[in-house]
Length: 101
Image 1 (cartoon, rainbow, N blue to C red):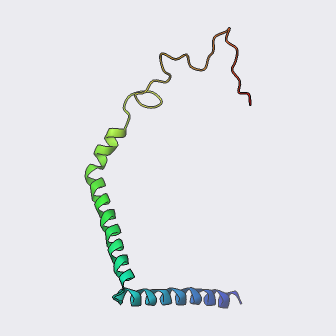
Image 2 (cartoon, rainbow, N blue to C red; image 1 turned 90 degrees about the vertical axis):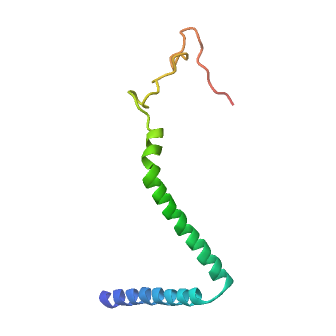
Image 3 (spheres, rainbow, N blue to C red; image 1 turned 180 degrees about the vertical axis):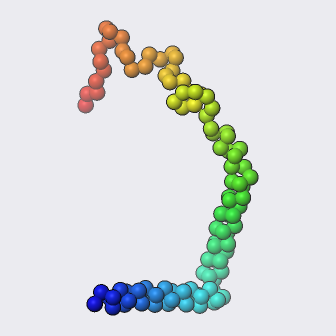
């Protein structure tokens, strides 16, 4: 019983995909303004993605080296704490500051 349901489900999916593709091809072949705009935008998107891919192939290592922090420590060359600030330890006489509404 389940096999017929699975076949029916797959058949419906295949039919809907084929109908979508046939409508898309019919619209693609029509000389409509919205199809022309879609073709222009699709070609611009594909061109941009290809350009980004090739630019990253050429300049990717340079960009990575610019932002790679070299040196020892948690964050590369940055110090663990600022030297002119005391950090989280407060002075013995200072009261702890609290937030009041």
